[in-house]
Amino acid sequence: MTGNIQEWQIYVTGFLAGTVQAFQQPARQVLINDLAGQKNLLNAIALNSAAFNLSRSVGPALCGVIIEFLGIDVSYYIQAALYAFATVWTIQMHVPKINRSLKICG
Image (cartoon, rainbow, N blue to C red; front, top):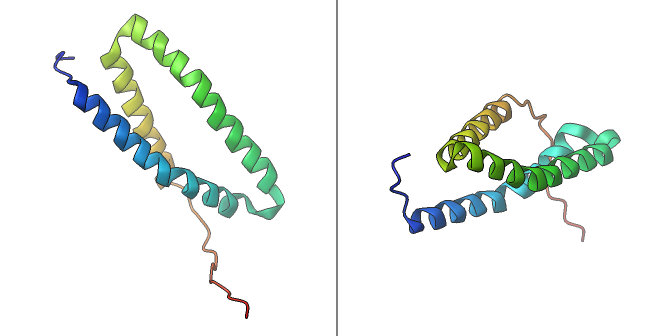
């Protein structure tokens, strides 16, 4: 909004987003298994993959439209609101406790 964004700020934001994604993706895969269970696991993985790939293709296009008509600052505010919304949903999840003890054969 102020027009004072510097190039390094964009790089730091991209780096932090990539770092979070590196930890988030494996955790999401384990969480899907814990929440869906063996019976629904294939459907849950397929649904997660479809949602993830759809958001990767539609998200940038939608963001481009928002930037064109509303501006870059509004697109960042919308993205921040969506992150906050997703965080609230994630906090409300009830994940069952599962015994993951390591068994070593030998």
